[in-house]
Length: 168
Image (cartoon, rainbow, N blue to C red):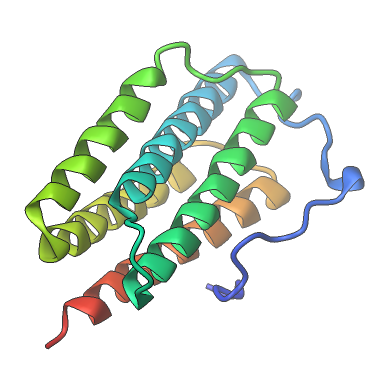
C-alpha cells in the first residue's frame, strides 16, 4: 500500500471525473456495478456508525471518530462518483445500510467505550475483507483500482487506531 494514510480527504480534480468501463463486457459491467454498489452501501453504514458513536466530549477518541467519519464520507463519495462514471446508480435499497449504521453506532455507544472501539474494529475488518474480494471481482481501470486500494488502506488505519485506543 503506497497511499498516504494521513490524508483524510484527497483532492479530486475535474479532469479526474471521466466516463469509465464502457468497453467492458456485460458480465464485467455487472461485476463492477455489484462491487461499486456494495462499497458505496458499506461506506454509508460506516459514516453512520461513526456519526452515532461520537459524543459531545472533547476527547482524543471523539476526535478520531470525527476524522474517521469524514474519511468514510470521502469513501462514500468516491464510490458514488465511480458508480455514475460507470453509468450506474446507487442501490435503491441502500437505506438498509444507513439504518444498520445507526443501529451499530447507537447500540455500541450505549454499551460503552470498549464496545464503540470493538464495533469499529469489527466494521473495519469486514470492510478490509470486502475490499479485497471486490478488488478481485471486476476488471478495474488503473484509476478506479487506485481509489479502491487507497480507501482500503484507510480502513486498515482506522482498525489500527481503534486497537491502539483499546490498549491499557
